[in-house]
Image (cartoon, rainbow, N blue to C red; front, side, top):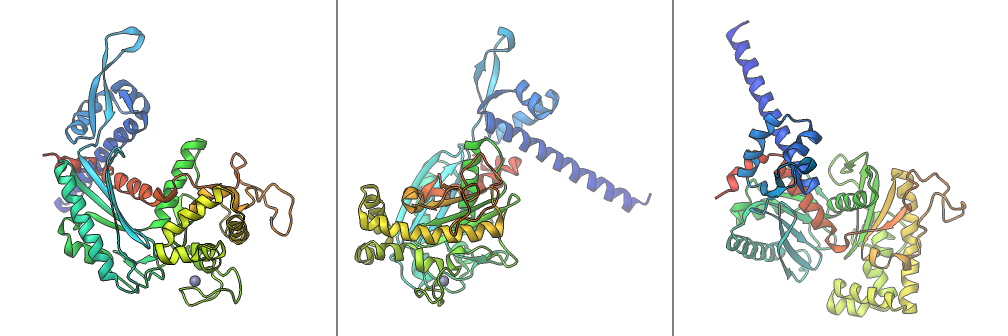
Length: 423
Ligand SMILES: [Zn+2]
């Protein structure tokens, strides 16, 4: 064997051993997170890692601030008490920065998912002026990061959540019809103005991360994996995400699955995308508010406030509101049917304010098992333990919940690096 060959093998084996070490650290972190309070023997039993390996892994995770010793728990068969471990992660913050059509929301949680703080500021929807929105974002983010410093929590990672198609690597905003944006390098502009974001900031599509969070919330409820799910949501427009075989559909350019602009009525109402009869133009919040007699309120106070009023009126049984929601529900059901034929999901989740008025939309919740008719197509529901169409569990926070999942998983995939955040 040549010396060059020998060095290569040595390098590979060092890389292998580092990979194994990271894998084992992740295994233990994951196990403790899932079981809240546990002991070394239980971890060893569940992960298959030898007690001897745990004697080096656990102190490393304790010193990285990820695990903490929490007194003791009774030993087996009443034996002497043994030290218990819990997941900690309270020293590192992950930040979700969400830009909606009307405001900027900055929320942070620690690695255990505990909320640290939330700040909001309206940006006034300056159509076609990304710089004005970015000014609001930067001011709010700097204020938020200062407050985290005051709490003595280290900044770990920021996920920027945008309700617009993204493309490229690193991704840029392709366009936002709601804000009148063309192509905008949002990440590049934020990093230039907030240098702490350099290497610690990701940009994601709101509905894609919301779909992942809703799938996880449902999985926890039903106790088995959901690998195929279609998520449709309406807050200030209509968006959605599709999970196929466990992966979020992004398409070849990153702009796959934009359900707000599928055609639902040929020659229908004009849409901001320049076509007519898109899903968003026919059953988006502005169309429903107009139909329900709340168009003026939306114009004066903004769509978010008008939608809150719409939900209140639906709950109190206002006939005009219920009729408008029923008409929107017919359009939603036709899109659900089409997308279900395209993706064959286990479930379809209706999120955003649609979850609050779910029953009033009167969407058939079991497209598979009822009698076939003009409105229901006969196919077999692949997951008979669930209704086929469900309201979302996470409401307007779904996208931020998904961003936190992504950020925490990202940081915990390199547990040893979290030493750097200590003192
Ligand atoms: Zn459109």
